Image 1: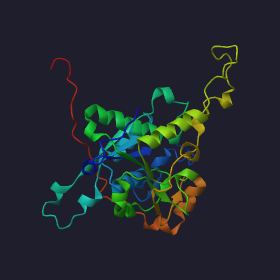
Image 2: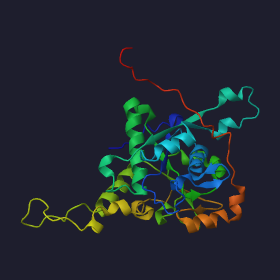
Image 3: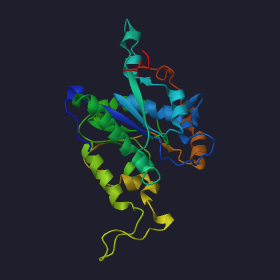
Image 4: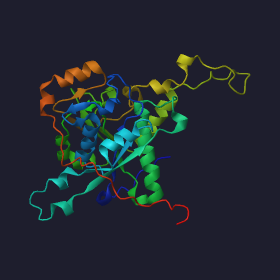
Amino acid sequence: MIESGTGNSQSFHLAGIIPIAGQASNINLGLPNCMVPVAENYTALELAVVQCAYAGCETIWIVCNDDVAPIIKHRLGDCVEDPVWVNRTQDPFPSESKQPIPIFYVPIHPNDRDKRDCQGWSVLHGALSAYHISNQMSKWIIPDRYFVAFSTGIYDPTGLRSYRREISSNKGFYLTTNGETIREGHPLSFTFDAEDFKRFRREVRRKGTGGWYAPKENEKYPSKKLPLEKRYSARHFSLDIVFKSAIIEGANKVEAPWFHSIKDWQHYRKFLASPEATNVERPDNLLPVSTLKPIGMDIKQGE
């Protein structure tokens, strides 16, 4: 069960979650949808990572299965630079002041494959993985809140830097477009905590079907299977179903200056033809393809 962090404002841990598993492949370019270019040498996934970096995330967790993880990791590496520290032009030692943000890759649990592994569930699984792995190391690094960035939601991430204090706070944060949020199914960034997680997961389990009809009054166990098209309906849940219970009243809400969803080919073409697409550029100083030094190494036999 996921629990809240220490709540210490001096050590607030904001974990970024990028859900790739469960994302529909509607663009059909021969690559995962997250790898489509949004600018020259700049993919949608890299833009989502940059969104997490500008939001002030201390760690980034990409939820992707083993079939796409190698190509994603080859492209991204193990870290992204914090834009606040990398752009300090007056720093006498700029290379020493950089603060890399580590990137972790986690797959969907095998028990959830083809049962409830929609994109919304990937968000919840990413938060659960971040909590368990952090908790195994120390209670002091348990995430206090989780910031979600979607590779299918395109907007200018630089504006998030001005709202870092609101994002890393005990109040929820929601980006909006025309007054609508993730609750209406838009792949817009938002934050949630442990209590929100429990509510979202409860709704998925309540609304989703299993593999069997409920047992009859005189039966102790189920005896009849559901039709194939009705089994495990949660794997097809859209974002608005998973996050319908999001509480945006009283939360920090910020209207995105512009926003494009690239969930399918038609929306992707619309974005590429928009005037905003001409202003999207790859921030090379934030995305150095680098590998962090391992914490520990396996001891080979005979050593």
